Image 1 (cartoon, rainbow, N blue to C red):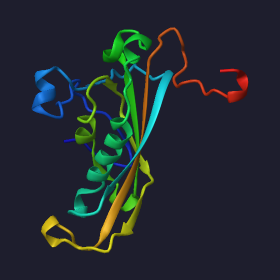
Image 2 (image 1 turned 45 degrees about the vertical axis):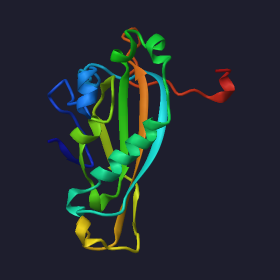
Image 3 (image 1 turned 135 degrees about the vertical axis):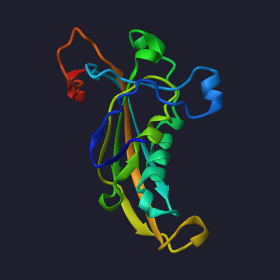
Length: 179
């Protein structure tokens, strides 16, 4: 299990265990991107929010991070990726940046990676962000020691690697440049 504390992490395995048996049966589940692949053609950015109000806080921000990533990708349909990305959705690069509270910085990155149905997942970046607050309720049966709730935010970027472009990151566009 890959865990991180405010770092960028990469697993050596290439195939990510699918989220469910149903996904496995139909061949869904992302792969890890090769080290040389960089997202230098940005197509889509999705943002999400996740809150975990109850549970064992020794487990960090994993539950909130999972909810944030699911929130970011759940309300989108991107059928054009098949034509916009050379090689289709199997060559789509996915970059995830998570903001989690510093006092709950541990995130199970393998669990986060399982959320993606296809594409090549770049190393997941975890940074200080999100917030904590008192939710006003303690449920000891759920592992609560206090009423701390954890909020995580996620930015999920989709694109691809264009080997003809030496840029290591996508171009930033200015609305005044006509694009």
